[in-house]
Image (tube, rainbow, N blue to C red; front, side, top):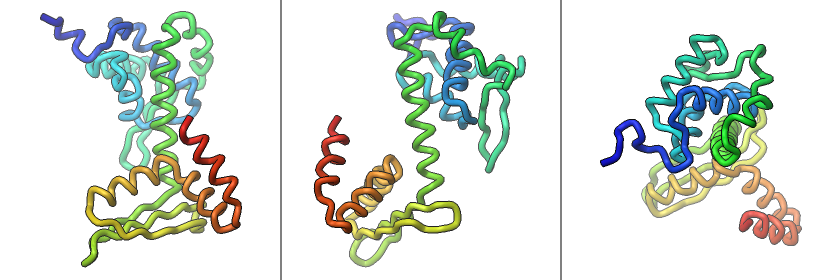
Length: 196
């Protein structure tokens, strides 16, 4: 029977609160910008690097000690490493295994990128008589750089289009620009890069 305190932790994951605190500090130091608290927690628990309860306990301790600063923005709590502790990333590298640091940082970068993309994009879904219209836009501050509308059969496809657009709006924008400019070789190169 598995110990309840180890549920959700993969082999090689962290079970010690001190190690989890170091990993949180490492991720925030490496990202170098405020990160939504929910994404920070997810970046550590998603690959079974630690369990939710230990991560939230470690984060609470770091916040209490002022190593991590929490700020509210648009109704969401963001975390960032305090300026006094920003040097921690280099010190932590020897304390937390490389594979654990790499998984947590990769997930954090992906989540941060997704959040940034969501801010720079706008996706609207409207139900119509013939299905769903999905309008995807790339914005630069107050100006719309690119917009495309697609008619899809159902809500599942509409949400699939939305999620894929938000994951990589640059690819959609660059691809459309290359096609409209008659640069099909750029499209081939882009397709090759997405396969890797």
